Length: 397
Image (tube, rainbow, N blue to C red; front, side, top):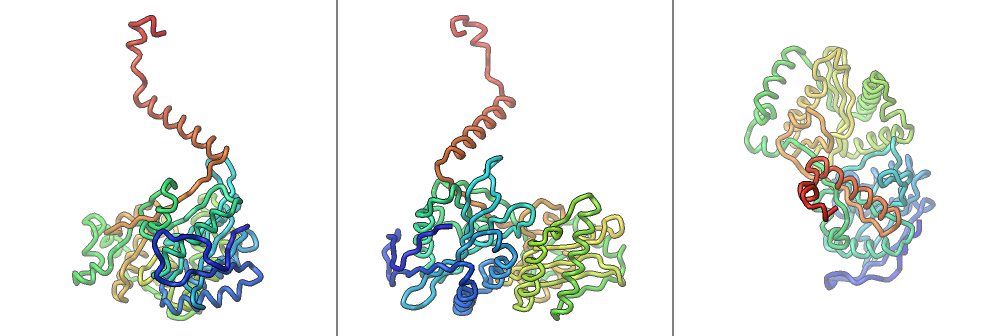
């Protein structure tokens, strides 16, 4: 991967600078540990509490995927102080429709399927005062790289893409809903989780809880307990998928290694929660949630069989939400995807974006033509053209 990084500012920001220009450095795999030291230094200085732009998340991803996905860590500084840092990767096995395309990705993305970590709430770690300048400089460096056909921004919040949208106004943006329960609102209202939910969901939860009887919840408080819950989560997750003839996400060795490492390392930093619900000695469900700035993200789960336990996912999440409310978290975010419990247990929604900037290539022209033809056929099937004029006026044939 070739990305031009200059030792002096090579771009002109869209707004006048009121501080020193950025000096850029590029770190490859042989300099990983040196780059991670700088990354952690910037995290501490900014008091960053987010996950997917953390050194721990990034390092675990690189150890799992870095021998497959070419990458560089780009560092910008001014006046001898690190102002911003990010990972840029070269996608492997990426598609635009049926065609393979050469891609660049911002953050921990670009893995082939199956086995992707599926990053959401993706971000760049940069000092707010330098953020726009960081993005402008980085875009110029990316634009100077002739090796990509598509530049992709995977799983960003809408607000974190505003500077990028100004640079790439014609980029395609796919927006997906991320539903969440607003724990802060419930706390301010001095109510519990159940009170904030819809009538049918409340009724269903009460019925299921009565059906279960006494349940025990474990919010991991030691690395040994966290490890035990994570191991059981993997077993339950795999068993559910294997039962319907699917391999399950953890069958992929890279994915398995990444989740094992990042889950426990983030737990040690207070950036992950491991939670389990049991009925006597039988486990109903296990959850791995990321603590992203006091917002819990429903990242991974494993549940007992539906045939053996009624609504295990609904019950596990509800009980975890009540505990999260007591522990002072702001939100319980179910991330993207269409599942019944996400709609039933959420009160609000956020939007995550997948943005793609495409260069003019024959592949892109072909895909645009195919998609245009598909849209035309879809419209034609709904409302075929009126042929009455042709039938009445022979000269028009």
